[in-house]
Length: 611
Image (cartoon, rainbow, N blue to C red; front, top):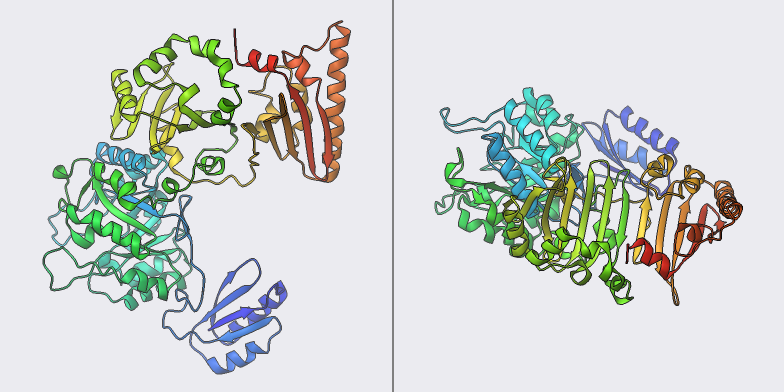
């Protein structure tokens, strides 16, 4: 049964309905939305009497039977799509998710090379088997616990989510400690003891269809997991056994839209096991995208001829790049959407990070970049050498940049025109390494490493960090909901932790920072005005009273700064921070504080290091 509560039903009404259901001997499974609660009812009892009683209970809008034998996974129970999060990656939502990796973990080098390759190609989740079910008892069975440890090491290095197969209910707790998603293979689809255990594992589960199983049987197996407490189930079509021998299995491609009609759970396709042939995987992958799959799970290996298992189905990492890019017609979401500041921000590691955004195309149009012609940046020999070897100059070729400054280093997304072949040659000539499109080399100091790869032909992910795979961390989407994005060519988002510490702030601004230490968010933007620029401050406070007090403090601090300069018998200089900081004005409106400083051309030239 399904009990639909009235919009905005009270907690007391919901609890009372649950108590009445329990009195009839049924189990309760509820879904709480923003406006209403839907309660699923399963068990054995007098259905008619229970329905009549609940329909008369306060707060109930409608009570009805579920006709399908699978209750919780049916669309009768939940009309909308379920979105399952795996290491921050959403499966079943707007993203098309690529999962790739080896059939089995064989060695540290193999899994690390594969992880770096698939992350650079655009995959979001690394698959790899630590435990492998084999038809023959003499075949390689996997590295077991050591394999799990290597998978976790690969995650720490690349930021990829991890999915690995679970074979026994005895191993659930151990495998859950090392992985982000538990995979149930085709041979275990009806291992009911395992399915029940996964109901309490605390991890999403990818459930593969059995080799001779019907769609109904697949949904009933999913029902076992959900009914035992785990609603985060992803279904996988991996081919079924038929009389056909041209392929390893027969891919039931129609199962994808059929499942989308019958269940709210996300559905992914495994083209590797469905065909068993490398040559067929790209075509079947395109078919999966077109027919409505939420993602692909593909086997890849850096050196297929040396693979310990599944040598027929391995796909070279070089081909995975094609799958993630043009072969899928740009369906992977961040490769097809416009490169907006909001989309760029989602890719940066922004926890406690000072984030700087510069729109070079707008500054170029306003003539600001021309001031750099005689700057120290342009005169730097290392930079001039880089320009000669790569034919890249940010004054002409860079359109936008977003940088997150964190203790581990700098993470950058650069939008512009890049000659990727020249960049790769530059890395190799500088003693670096390139793994297909992912490149890494030594930084200017021993503790810093540079890494980068193309997210699009015009978008580079680059990191200068304490390891050589930092750029791969930008493969993960992590929306920063509390960050305001001004419509400005230059803006700076300052986290409260930086404001409180005063670190990384220019000299002379610390006294203002002390007033801002209780702010919830601080954004500083540089915007063009008639014949000059202006800096605008936006601060969000906890309350209207806090905002009013902050505006008064900032105006008072500005006045005190003027007095200090007057005591030195000097006048504020419009070409340095003394003139800039003493020209500020602040006001509050509700829980917000806004500030304004005019910026002179002389100050811009001074800050840019012009001669």
